[in-house]
Image 1: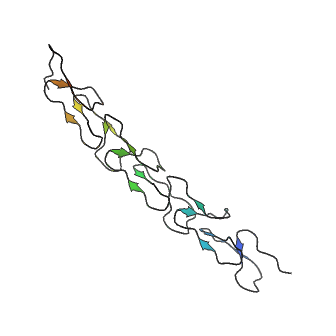
Image 2: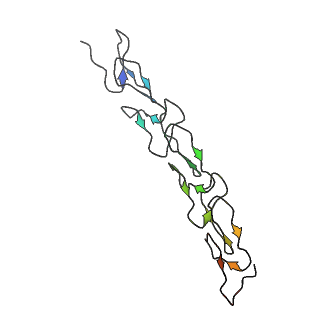
Image 3: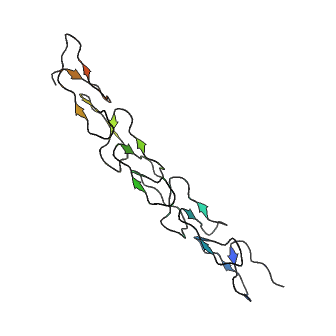
Length: 161
């Protein structure tokens, strides 16, 4: 009698004496058909029955992947089937496997792509946008750290800078 192929194996020719193991990066959903490559964004190592989508924030380099790739800091991986995208100016990713870069908080900025953190707006400057360098407060005004505007000095006070 003939025996059916076990899970993760296949036999596509008549008269085979054994079943072939399904190679990693492919899935064998029907034992009488050729292995099917995992789609971009999916992977299958040898222990898995079928191709699985990569977790959010990870990606694959191509089809037939046996593992998901890490999305590096300073990048976002919005989809599992495309390469990491550098964080834009005014955004950052401080952790690996980030699906979407975060916008700098109010009073912080970064003027570089691929940032892993935002810089605090310094005292005596204001930062109206997270995408531009700090601007010096005009004479007669002041600011503390992390400000988006400068404040006018009260009567009887001055700011020399």
